[in-house]
Image 1: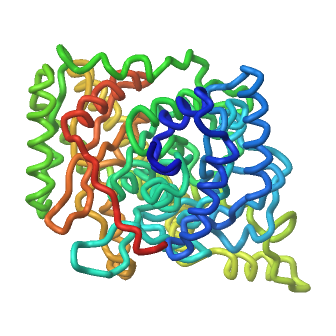
Image 2: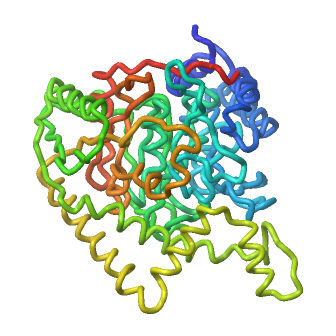
Image 3: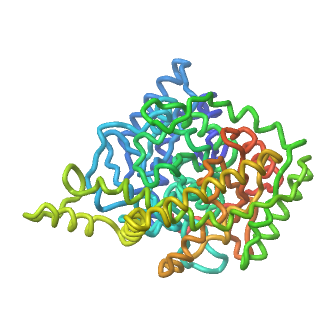
Length: 491
């Protein structure tokens, strides 16, 4: 048997069910490994006592024959999800010491299904970033390295702690969130699987808000089956979230082996952008051939509104962020910089508490919402967003899925793009359309570039049709046979 931390979530589930090992043994193995991974900076806090208590409870349930779907499975929780009694800071100085008295709906769903919380995972501050370099706790480091090069690489963002932890086998799977690509982009550059479900599929209650009309929770896992298992437990209607949709959650794992025979897969020509590496173009073409060989019909499609997706996103998302982050003022919780004048206290607290990228987005958002610019920018962006949605739905009426690259490049070095925000924002060029339209999208590891870094392919589906997305993802995964792993230079 492989060492416990090498087993997939499904493998752990099966082994625990057969009593080949205990949940406490699995948890201890992961806690030991996570404790050795300081150089990756993936965890901002490890919750040893909570994890061991949950594992012991799981062992008792297994012994009684009362195991739940995720009984004893050790997970990492992105520090954007509020966790009762455990500090939650969203990667920000302004939330210093904030300890929720409640549990986010998604993490509660996972714990109700038997999951074990190993700890809280690092992220870009308030989920704003594409490289996990904006965190108050410092950057997360990708466990992958370029061949023959020791430069530290980004694990993607904002869910870089989640993607690094899953890729380095520090947890069996992790929660993540995706506002403009923050599940799929980090999954792509770390050789993991990440799915952003349809907007409204998972509750946003108890998740620290960035952009409320775009944020959506999802899992990062080692393979497609694990993603299907995780999403089944994470999803569901929540009366506490007015954007949560009341519809049944299918058994995603049950459809994985149905294949793609007879499905129509659209290939949008507009995703062939200038300057895209030849390797990504070749991998995309390879993905087309894999799906064709699996029995799918490939259809060329056009999405001319795609070119407007990134500009629209960087108007809508900062606007919503400026509103959501107005609540952080040093009065009720978190950081406070004292001053006798309350307005000065507000100003000093926010100046000290927010990092440069968050301040940049608040300023952009406040500007586009201000008198004289609201109609010119924000309202116009919302109108274009609707056109993007209509165009995507028109195309998806004729095809079952869209196949695109996940990212415009493999992992890049820490510090390589921080001086140029536009260059950083372009990392989400293939992913933001799914967020603007609220559609499900998944990234599957499909190959390595010339420097032996992972590259992913993305599938986008119809609203609430994650089943078809999973079928396509499993077909890609089977054809690609991706089994590469990063080295363990960090241990």
